[in-house]
Image (tube, rainbow, N blue to C red):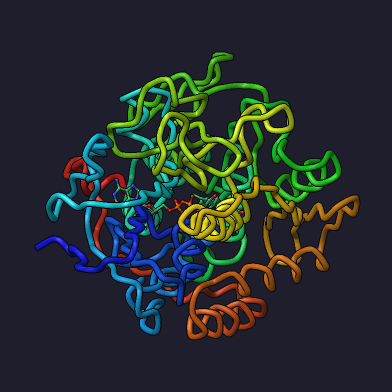
Length: 433
Ligand SMILES: Cc1cc2nc3c(=O)[nH]c(=O)nc-3n(C[C@H](O)[C@H](O)[C@H](O)COP(=O)(O)OP(=O)(O)OC[C@H]3O[C@@H](n4cnc5c(N)ncnc54)[C@H](O)[C@@H]3O)c2cc1C
């Protein structure tokens, strides 16, 4: 049964309960509209901490929060657990896994998916990290590789099992590589005393000449220093050519024997079918005007990672970060109410509060305005900002206590294989989304 709403109030349907969708729905509280939020998951995912789930540092539940619970006190809100497949703009409806749903205003807040650049071999053998199921697959894969390495007699096979390659040296890849290096330097000896931690290798393969190239030169230089001091091997200015599950080939001819390739080399927008092709721009994002309305439509909007407001200041749209998504969601709430009430709308202006990345304990970098911070100060700031933006008081307290504990011991709570990972049995449903 689809969650149809019988109300005379304008009905706003939001697809996606990420930062953008939640930001919008919350701001519509107590407004004379009906809000229906649809998501393929019944929880919101705090993606910036997925890498900690993937490396066993945090439990999955501490970075996911049930959407219904977030809105328990919002009477004009309802939720539907549904995959949205198609937009029928001519009749103001969408096709979903729970039936056809009508809308007065439709907002696509569907985020992005991993970009394998159309290479199906890489998509099959490499592990993306855009969702909780994917992070849990990664965690199982990492732990199973060590379990298998313990009993492996063949040195070549053992080397493959203990070699981890992170493709992409942006914030996600850098944080993931740092977490794997901490695993090597502090956990391996304790959990697997029979494995020699010198045999564990962590590589980062990045097409730009530096890691963390999206941040300042200071941040990039510090990140390189931190990673190399932690034993991470950096291959810069090169691209992965192929990976067949055991051998990774780089376009400069170098080869790495490995079973574990973690793909953090970028994302592309994702959204249901039905948007006119002329609205789809670089990075598979939907071009919108300055109030996030999709060009050529009166009542369909796109916000967050999936949207691109193209202007001279933002020729490729805004960066795909949580702050943009959250701010666009909140701003659209004001504009939707202005449209409904016949008032003037206001263009979206991004308030860039800075960017940060953490490489390990006491090792983070932050660019805030003209200030470039690194080391302990940046790391503490990173911890507090992430705790602040986590959804749910319980989750915040849990993560805080966990991080304080881990500061002294490096021991995370979740090095457990709940759902064993098997590449052979991976279907499209278990792999992505
Ligand atoms: C590993 C990782 C680390 C990151 N680290 C940082 C960081 O440190 N700082 C930062 O600012 N940003 C970071 N980001 C980026 C940030 O998470 C995104 O910019 C942000 O999540 C975008 O929010 P959104 O609401 O647009 O999309 P999302 O948060 O991706 O939410 C989209 C939602 O739409 C749902 N959905 C999609 N398609 C459908 C459909 N057809 N039907 C139903 N539901 C659908 C999805 O289930 C999801 O819940 C990181 C991202 C990743 C993956």
